[in-house]
Amino acid sequence: MSVAEIAESIKDRVAAGSFDSVVKFNCGDDGVLVVDNQTVSTEDQEADCTIGISLEDLQSIVAGELDPTGAFMQGKLQIEGDMSVAMKLGQVL
View 1 (cartoon, rainbow, N blue to C red):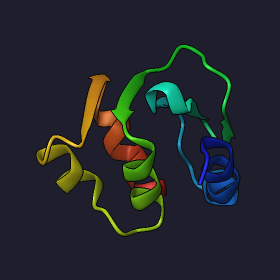
View 2: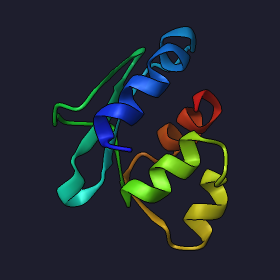
View 3: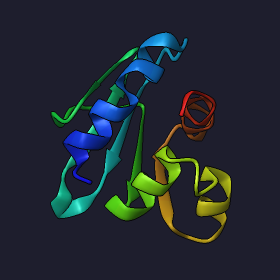
View 4: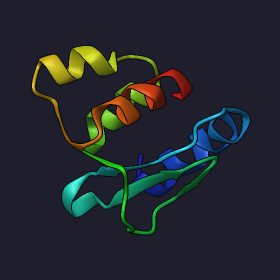
């Protein structure tokens, strides 16, 4: 699954939520996914919080197969910026 396919798969969940910040998932060479309030895009932009993660692990989190907190504790993702924003997004995803 590509970053664009993941973005499409979470678009409705994000639109229905009450997320009010900007988070960027940086998947390296695979691209970026940005959740900006209640919209999702694959265009790079400034964010309140940037999460470094592999495309495979992002896909697992979105599918509910990998707990975001557990992924952080296992070193599968790195957070730069406001960690509380990342925690709020976990409730939406």
